[in-house]
Amino acid sequence: MFIGEYQHTVDEKGRLAIPVKFRADLSKGAIVTRGLDHSLFIYPQSEWNVLAEKLVKLPISQSKSRAFARLMLAGAMDVALDRQGRVVLPEYLREYAGISKKTVVAGLYNRLEVWDEAAWKKYKAETEKDSNEIAETLGELGV
Image (tube, rainbow, N blue to C red):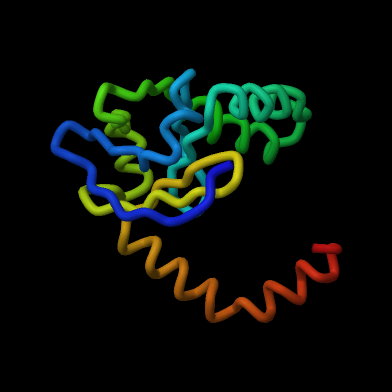
């Protein structure tokens, strides 16, 4: 289970150190892809397989299904931890997420999200401001 928020930097070669507590879950393979809200998602291989199976079953006749599958699948890349617990974030994904140096790695149960630090701070401030409204909406859904 991935939880928590960690600040890290991306080096000049595009390498990002994965927080130590998450490395074992990613040691058998991982996938990085375009996420939502201009973040990157990193999934352990096993979780990625579950998501990919769902994506390929979406109705191809619906444009939003095709668009979401393309966003997630076409942007995906296999990554492996190096000896120092780093993964290389491909340049096209760093560009998509606006990541240059300072990042936030956020654990979200079955995936990690990687954000540009400034974008994360802005997103988090907006979400925290709307937290009561969000809680009410989720309460209606049984959460």
